[in-house]
Amino acid sequence: MSQRRACVIGHPVAHSRSPTIHRYWLKEHGIDGDYAREDVAPEEIGKFLGALGTRGYVGANITVPHKAAAYLALEEADDVATALKVANTVWLEDGRLHGTNTDVHGFLANLDESLPGWAVETEQAVVLGAGGGARAVVYGLLQRGFPRVVVVNRTLARAEAFVVEFGDRVTATTFDALTGWLPDADLLVNTTSLGMTGQPPLEIDLAPMQTGAAVYDIVYVPLETPLLAAARARGLRTVDGLGMLLHQAVPAFERFFGMKPEVTRELRDTVLADIARAQTR
Ligand code: ATR
Image 1 (cartoon, rainbow, N blue to C red):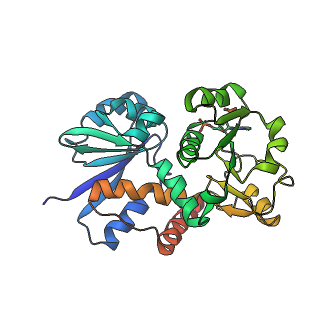
Image 2: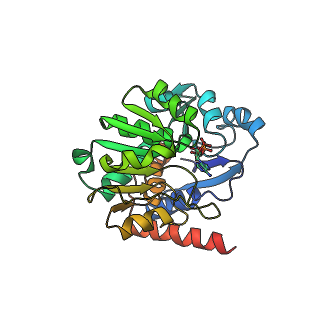
Image 3: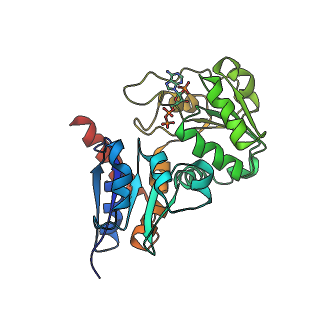
């Protein structure tokens, strides 16, 4: 059988850590495969995906800014991609372009691994941000049966759109009202870009949160954001965003290369070293 090849498609794409993750697993399992980076301009993405097979790829991961366009290019979208209208993983099956969104799996699997049993204890989650990351997070929390998910966003209209889309278990509000929601929050998730290297920190007072509550930041550069450092200092449980990145790659790798890989400590360290190298470049 010829070598199986997959890629990550973005614009820009140099920052993507997906090649490191997939190549690590290819090597670990001795699979004859390759995983490349493809920088594709927005006006070319439909054409590129239409010719994925001719380019020699069995599938691809999709990153910013192409996730919505990739969804539109699909011939078969699964339930998650259909619900979110964005695809981060596409593959060819019976000559047709299939797609899903593995960010939801990545978000939940990281939570399951970091806080075993979390879904049993939790009733209310507060999600900061209402962009693409928040869509996967809110959808995942609702799928796991959260009775209430409060979406807090700078622009209220974007949070309100979540209520229309995902139903009345979602409450929309702005940062002014955040303090009032924190005492009952079992889980606080940051999906905004604040706290990421090069961005201002997310300055919120965690004092109203109860002992035993957890704070999850989907940002992973830096690994410990100012928000997570503040949560840790208060004795709250914390979950960093690197696990989400690693876990979202698992179902994608399985589609591309036919076996389900594992997220291990060694993989995590390999990706962390890679991020550190990229930052000093
Ligand atoms: P992504 O797809 O990565 O989530 P996005 O769609 O650009 O990216 O969303 C970024 C999120 O961070 C949004 O919720 C944005 O708030 P707005 O909808 O009001 O723009 C939030 N965000 C970005 N910069 C912010 C800032 N300085 N203060 C508060 N929220 C901010």
